[in-house]
Amino acid sequence: MEPAVSKRPPKNPVRPPQPEPQRANRSRAVAELLPAIGGAAFRRFGFVQSAIVSRWPDIVGERWANVSRPESLRFPIGEKRDGTLSLIVKGAHAPMMQHIVPEIAERVNRFFGYTAVARVQIRQGEVSAREPRRAPPSLKPAPAEMSGGLRTIADPELRAVLESLAAGVAASAGVPRIG
Image 1 (cartoon, one colour):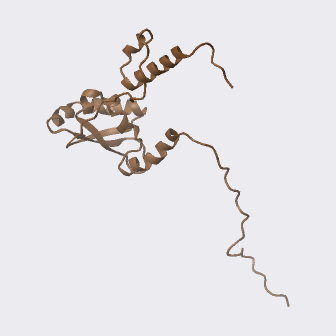
Image 2 (cartoon, rainbow, N blue to C red):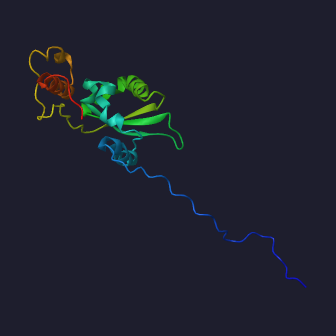
Image 3 (spheres, rainbow, N blue to C red):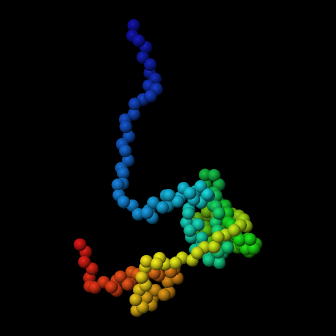
């Protein structure tokens, strides 16, 4: 008599080892790594994209950015649209901000490119004063004859970088040598 053979598969089938993913052993710019590092912290506090915090003056304008700041952007569970934007506004400015809530929602949605914000909540609170952006002290201004067209650039840091580039180009003699 032959022993009975079970037709059930074994409990722990042996799987072939999976190949390791290819590693990118290359140097990367810090700017390439920062969104991943800061992204976890921003998501923890309700921000899916950190750009709304860093670009708040560009989104709502300097006037409203000086008296408000975004606190969080929360979406319904499993969704990435029709969220609620929570703002902190300086005390007396809250009633005025209430009047421009539709415009703020429209500007934020235009910034994202889709209907990210369906509702805006306003909470009165302390808004820290932002320091104006300054050019780094390491950059040298361009010669006067070259910087005429650069005076119209509003961003001081960008203007200083372009002036430094112009000064470097003016200081070079002849065609640059590679090699």
